[in-house]
Length: 442
Image (cartoon, rainbow, N blue to C red; front, side):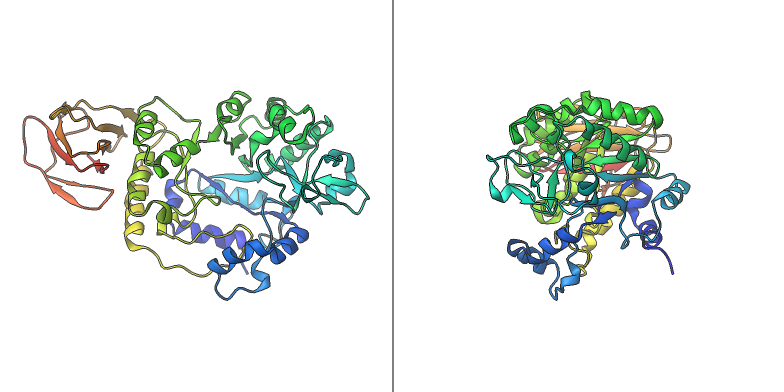
């Protein structure tokens, strides 16, 4: 009988995203909290979302939050092995990197670490609301993990960053994780910044991300730290040593149809430290949020040299958001149009490598209507992206140049439609409807 992770790897190899993706982040692999499971199974406000994702829901389908970590050991549902080193080696054979979760702000309320290290967690004072704290079996009232804008997550306990020993404990945990993977995705990484912790809990923090990251990299120099971060604190975390940080601003701009912002960001120089996305486990499915235009938005993200975060099921056009506490959900029919688009898109972008060159082709304006035009050149192909960011139709000519030569037929990766070309000394003619994106290969 195959290990669950081996079966997952076989499944992934059949997906078009396997060739395209350089790194795989597996959520929910650490040991699950029994208390979190009980809370999720009985919490009334969670039930409608559970039933939406699983019509014939049974109690065993609800497993608890992957962000209420009991211990940094593999969950028995995921593997019977003591760590992820074997799976890590398997991925390496395919030249893929493994990213695992590190949840730095809190642990599960029943974590054994509370018994062995009771002083490393934040004890509640009189000002803490009862709904944001709980009584542990050791007799202490502890604070739930939380951010400054919402009540606490009731299945978690807050690390006490006013205790310098927490930083040392994190370094120890991270060094053990670093033996098993290539990097960590740090959940809500900005909550550990001193000003954020003090705003949330009224205590001074001694935690320093730069010390933590540097300490781990002494032993594991190539280990990656990715920050889930919001509130404009992304650059601050990058300055402390993170390899890259979430950039929700582009997602919000697509959502709010703020195309001026999208255009400005697409035209900036290299943004390798940005992690862009159209969906993730916290957001609605791209197909649900954006509809058919999601294909165009994903194409625009592919025109950048940032990191693109791709969510499982996105390539199949799934529209059902799955609550993180569920381990079983109903099967969903594949959206054929989305499946075909992502096959084209991922196959095309998977041919890029570290020597790929991003450049801005010359083009001749037609009636002064500006469009976004960008190209990516590899050894075997040139990709050409066009986006009419205007509210009216735009057309023009792109002169022939290095990598962009006459072809009698061009196929648009976004739609799959083909366009015949009449040879002209002016170059390649295009005509775009408002907000239309085209993506061609030469």
